[in-house]
Picture 1 (cartoon, rainbow, N blue to C red):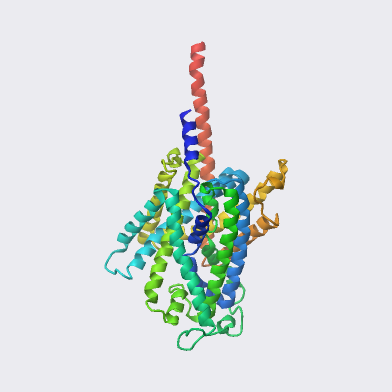
Picture 2: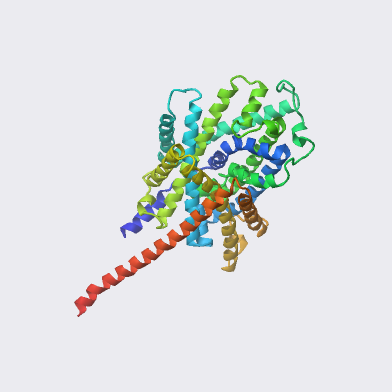
Amino acid sequence: MNSQNTTANNESQFQRSMQLRHLIMLSLGGVIGSGLFFGTGHIIANVGAFGTVVAYLIGAFMVYLIMLSLGELSVAHPDPGSFHVYASRYISPASGYAVAWLYWLNWTVTLGTAFTAVGFAMQYWFPNVPVWVWCIIFGSLIFLLNVIDTRFFAESEFYLSLIKVITIQAFIILGACALFDVIPFGENGSPGLTNLVGNGELLPNGIAPLLFTMVTVCFAYSGTELIGVAAGETNSPEKVIPLAVKASLLRLVIFFVGTVLIVALLVPAETATVSKSPFMTVFEELGIPYAADIFNFVIITAILSSANTGLFASGRMVWSLGHSGMMPAGLAKLNKRGVPVNALAFSMLGGLLALASSVMAADTVFVILTSIVGFSTVAVWLSICIAHYRFRKQFLASGHSLDELKYKSPMFPLVPIVGGALCLVVMIGMGIDPDQRVALYCGIPFTVLCYVIYHMAQKVRKNKSTDESQGSGSPRQAVAS
């Protein structure tokens, strides 16, 4: 009786305080980060300007399909830890367990690397302060932003993301002005469309590198699915989530494709690297005063925003596992303000372990963890497509009509089928590229391990339940005799 009351209280305590603006910024905050600011340079160097724009357009189309699938699932089941719930219900409970751990690990490792990155960024201004000091300071700040209450987290993320959004808008406007010679750009002026065609070839290195770079593009777009995680804490999800999906996708296409187009046109492929952000190169060529300081500040806010959303997402995954009985029940507890503090603390501990591995075992453990992160992003997206396809089929097979759905994805079943196929293509690209093959070597065994652990735990639980039932029966038999 007490356990039932506790569960009911926990369910009722989740605050549905997120609004449309929070969801949009949460999605943008999880996406706009190092993948866009630094990964774009790597893509330009490999496939050129034209290939970079094409890669991001394909990625945007892929994300669009996945978000349509996620929108239908999230409105039908607005649960915290949504991916785990969808995969459990419409694929298998073991798949839900694996998806939850993959997504938790994705954001937890991101959390650890974010603290390290912020520490290095702060050393630009304070070179004598050790990195670990900044890790503790900003780690504590992010934890506090998450544990006060959901509304406070949402507001903090709104303003952290707003800084990035404003910066990108300013970048697009200034870059476009430089491109059309409205304002001066460097010593030689605007390159025009010269960088787009390079040496006369749209894809100077062939089409294969385009396939390989899709993994980096997926990293850059990862985080859009956070709308589904926040669905359980959203007021009127049937109204807010469809609007958030449309608004987020529109902004992502404008920000990503627009930004990448400007960068690709202004930064030659031969000078683009992953070690220096092409954004910094453009700012310097524009002659903007204190460009390095401005961009360093933006990078810090971008990383903190990513860490903020990462702790939110990973904490909800742990809560969902605890709530469904797949982890200790203590991790499913909520405080009086509806915050899963224990789950957040568990995720923060995982982030600190990832941080430690990045310092003490950079060439071993950390490489493995980051490889699994790349694999897990695409694997989670694939699970969303499969769950959506099976959900719609089961919904109609059980006698329901499409009119009962408060939000339904168009072009079914093409949306989940094409979206899932694109996810598989990205995984094939991982296997072909020797530099990215380690993602499959690590990610597939990790996923298999999750399945094995789940089935072993279920077997132990079943045997324990059988022993308890037999044990409770023996005293009665003794009394009867």
